[in-house]
Amino acid sequence: MAAENVVPLRTAPRIDRFRAERAVTELLAALGYPADGEHRANTPQRVTSAFEELLTPSAFLPTTFPNDEGYDELVVARQVPFRSLCEHHLLPFAGTAHVGYLPGSRIVGLSKLARVVEHFAAGLQVQERLTQQVADWLHDNLAARGVGVVVEAEHLCMSLRGVRAAGARTVTSALRGDLRTDARTRDEFLSLARGS
Ligand code: ZN
Image (cartoon, rainbow, N blue to C red; front, side, top):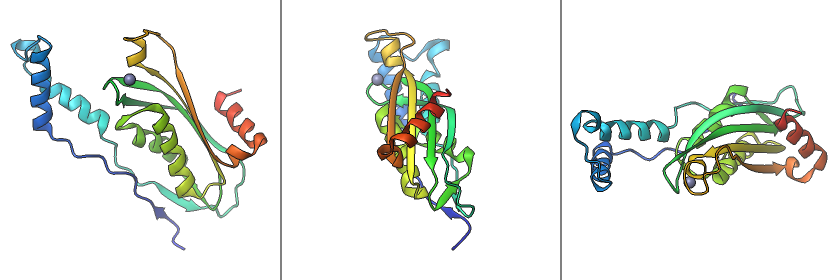
């Protein structure tokens, strides 16, 4: 078996900058703030660039390795920062993810756990789906015995508008394999994720 195994992640949709800039120009006009004058003349380009940055995952090779040493304890990356865009309001949500797995036949570099979070966060998302995608990707591609993902985030669509619950954080979790079925392993992961 090869020492390395590279697994492709999802490919992001292509961004049509011309249409996006035209749409932002139209949106500004519709909101009563036409894209003219020194401050707003380049706003359509800036908004498009900001969306492009938030929606484009950085390229990385999610290399995995055989678990030659037979490591069989939990591996947990805590407080992985991320930001994403809520697909219901096109407003950002941001927070931290705690990602753990119980190795099976393959292991992955620790920095790659953070890269997987960043990768799936770079798109129009809802927090529940983001949490599941990270868990499923790790579970499937590492042949892990178990995976746990806890995501905590503040959503601007909740803190700046609507209920205006400033500082409120939404917590979601996804558990797979032994972390779902075995109470002791699950408790160990959740206490490591909490940092207690
Ligand atoms: Zn929202």
